[in-house]
Length: 614
Image (tube, rainbow, N blue to C red; front, top):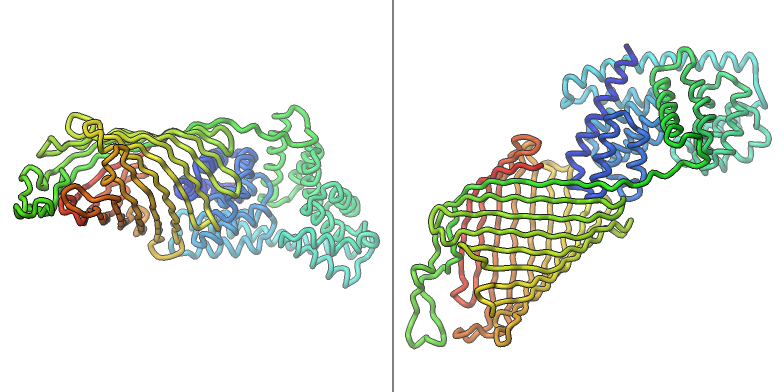
């Protein structure tokens, strides 16, 4: 029964870890890492911890302290028989997300698997007492506390018996009080992941205390953790020779032999520990996982290899996308001017000119069907090719001559350069239709660099060139060159988990046709976005932006260089109806203020969108 309860706890933890990784990987890691995290989560659900660990280990340098990664990494290490390392990874996950229930549950399990029952009990007891813990999981925590209490009692009894046996039959060189103090201090350093310092502290005692099983055990573990498995195996064999029932030393010897490539010898030691009568269920399970992992390694290679064979990266193709249906109201479907009259300086002697009623803003309800598709093919752990396609159809309930449609996409390659970040290059293209014909075509190229700093700040820089062509107004064709920088962060620990992004834009749009330099302008812009999470199913968002267009030459008939200021504001909420379906009501306001009255305009758009992702 106790074993069943512990397995139940493990199952709950793994499922929660996988769910968290799948739910939050996309916003915090790049496409390559997200694919690896999802693969690892699937392998853990299939009880294939060594394979999951092989997927996660290459990500450790770049994703250290990332909560989602450390969560999965800690589970994989624990299930692969390396609970001490699992404890460290799970503590890093909790440092990033202190309230992560699943990480606390997994930390308790890893501590118990590592034999630190007291710390495991504290962790699980604290979890049991949380008011937000689901009732089913609360019952599991209660039962596991009972199991751990029994394990603590057995451990205490075993230690008492061991001390009595040692007092009756002292083995090996005797350690003085000073020596024992040094050994205990070294053991603390090993637990603190300072194995090299522990080894340096023990080395001066080696000639005198070699053969003392307590010294040899700590000395062997320190050597193993410091990367000296051969030295460790010698010391651990001495400890076992002096005390044949020293099961902890035998388990560590199995680890040392595995590190040396002697998988058959490692399996023999793990099996010996696993089959000990009265071994706690957690320890027995850990030994069983070690044996299973070795069996898998031997099956893959046919023999015990001298060195582990690196896994050949397998190409992966991922497809995702969305379909969105919207209905709403637009106060200016034709982008008409704000004023009904214009004063044209070159014709001022005629007085103000009236704007044609056909050019004034037209109001209409609308329906929109939009969709997007992303295909990513990972060539290896660092390189991928990708394609993104988007499109929409925007019919109007009135003034159908201003209905629009859009189709576009990009295709390119992205590569991750370790700690330097990810760089992508892409070709882009787009067609914008108005009525029954193409109004504007765009083609060009873009490059982007992105990186995450301190596992909190997402930073990106991009540069692009776009050729903008108007099929029915060739004289207005232009080339646009722009650079964009973005920095973003989410504060998970704050109320409403606010996420803020700030973007700056600079560029130049140049008219291609001689004599049309009044269409050439320099642009500067900024955008700030905020998102808050009010409930797991409810988020609110807001965005404001400003862009300044300063033109090079006088606009015809107006005797002044045109200067436009573009304001834009968007706000709304997102209601998650299910994991893949959300409802998104929003309000959008835009305004252009220009010193050429013809280009002054205001626009309100209200809409409700239903989005389905896949």
